[in-house]
Image 1 (tube, rainbow, N blue to C red):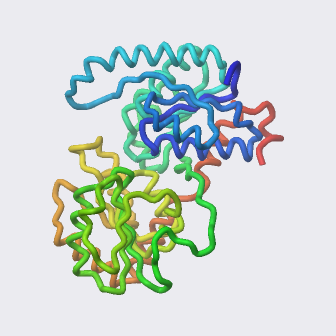
Image 2: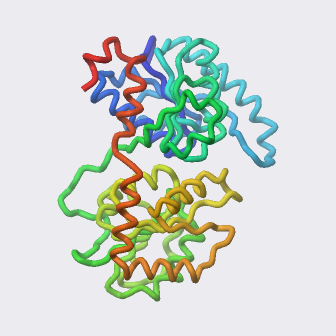
Image 3: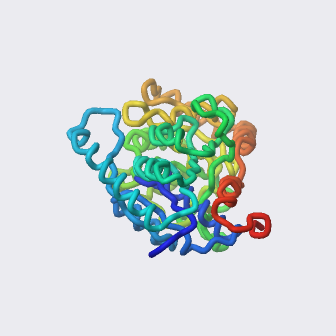
Length: 369
């Protein structure tokens, strides 16, 4: 891409920042008449970011960016220099491409881009998926004309409340339907328990499920996405399907499931809630995260939309008892699924896109469908 573009998007370091942004880009192209060539994504120098964006036909430029850590690491000595370098690179890219606005999806790479946009007087719109805003979002809020948030309950976390807009979360592309095909065999009428711990999996969650297996009815099917863990440690049972990763078919599998056990990432929760799934949540603890998953899980549990258990006080036997109770209680699962569905909607990409439309189209009223 050379010359000007209409919008620069930024965010990266995880799929949780990139895939929702892609959903917004898709809406702008399909409903607001934007051409894909008019979108540039500034991402981190992680090759996975470029890989994902390229697979969706989005042009990207990579910059160096220092990670904003809350713990001691020798990299903390180098990262301030990476932040300065990233800011200089972002400034150069924005001057060259002259976008009408910048859309930030968060992540540490967004900070130098947003601050460079602020210096150049380019309008910034930000979106945060979690109830607890990330450090990047908190740093970017002063430079953002609008900050789109998932729930009204998140508003108290921000100091610039007049700029907040509750939009919900964007949902990425769903996989095309292929009849009744499922990536693993689950017979019609069989109870399906879906377990997944994110792309990297979860050793603790895996161990809990393996302990649970002997206590489940033989006619119940367990589909367990282990992440990038070795599957050879998984037990062999006729009703248990361990897979390391699903290239496709996850949405269809989720739709077919009766109960889901998972972490509590914002994208995961939103997708599961949209399908009205009863959920048992085991969020990442504050020992290895900033606590955003715990906040998400608490909110869903408070609204009757999930059961949640925290890693710092995990009673394995109680978790297993509660899972078994849900398995045998379809009424509770239905109520939980309905409560989850009431919290979310599938218009997040559209609502965010409509905030961006006045900046990226010449005639918003005529363009938006």
